Amino acid sequence: MASKYKIAGDGIKDTETGAFIPNASGNRHWQEYQTWLADSTSNIPDPEFTEQELEDQAWASLRAERDSLLTKTDFMMTQDYYASMTSQEQTDVTAYRSDLRDLPGDTVDPTDPTWPTKPQIVIDNGI
Image 1 (tube, helix red, strand yellow):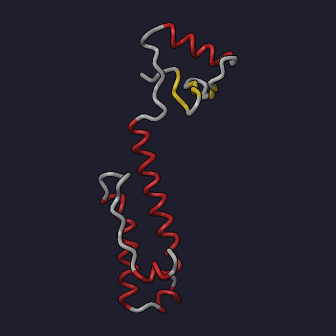
Image 2 (spheres, helix red, strand yellow; image 1 turned 30 degrees about the horizontal axis):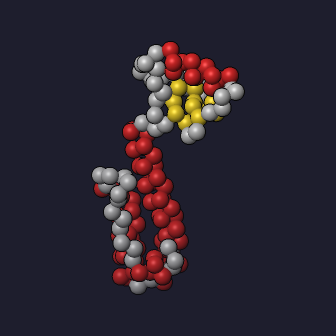
Image 3 (tube, helix red, strand yellow; image 1 turned 60 degrees about the horizontal axis):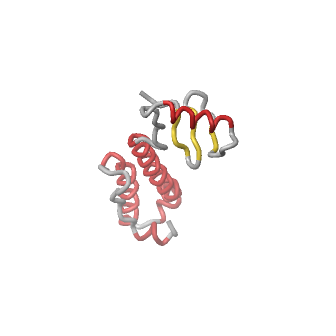
């Protein structure tokens, strides 16, 4: 069962109202929180982030970085730019982008992904 309170940075979040309660002894809500803590040894605030929330954040971060790399190489797939590349560069960029799209599915630990190697043409374009 979720707790009434959750640790939130340097304060507490009231999980029922969503309000942030700063760690300030003069704050009425902080005093209510302190009373709640003292009322029972089973009154323990939830951690700032659960293991599942941390994992979800790591996956979201991985996807965001992957999406950024895909966006940065989108121009390479336009007809004019693509036609200006050698066939090897075309193959390398296409494979790189495919590997990026496959990355989340090929990753066990989102905090330690194995990023595909950037082809030289991607590096040459400052990506």
